[in-house]
Image (cartoon, rainbow, N blue to C red; front, side, top):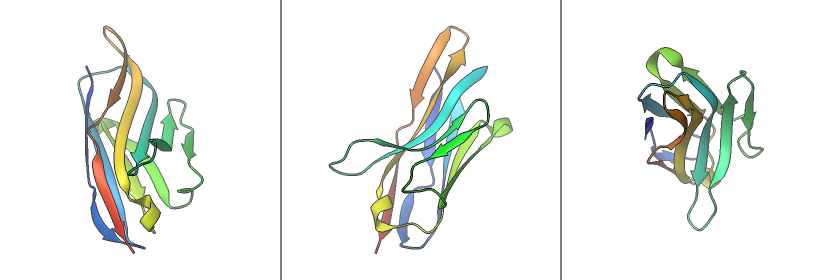
Amino acid sequence: QVQLVESGGGLVQAGGSLRLSCVASGSFFSFDAMSWYRQAPGRQRELVARIHSGGSDWYGDSVKGRFTMSRDNAKNTVYLQMVNLKFEDTAVYYCNIVGSRIGGRFNSWGQGTQVTVTS
């Protein structure tokens, strides 16, 4: 199984920045999409940003222009750079990768990292 571990969350004032990291362990030879989701208390988990295998990316309207997703293949790491953070960005952020490995398909989630933005 491919395991994901997120880090980089924390407490930040509105207008501040954070960079989240997601390290994948366990080998896989292709991915369909790498994504960041978030879930605020009392709300459903929502897609924040996604990188497709073809290289295209997608961002939610609420984060467009403020969040940037990137990856470092050599480090098996996916990043989410967040700038100009707002109170409404407060949530637990989850990394997700869907792809293929020896043995079949996988759909892995990390344990989440808390981001708290104070106004």
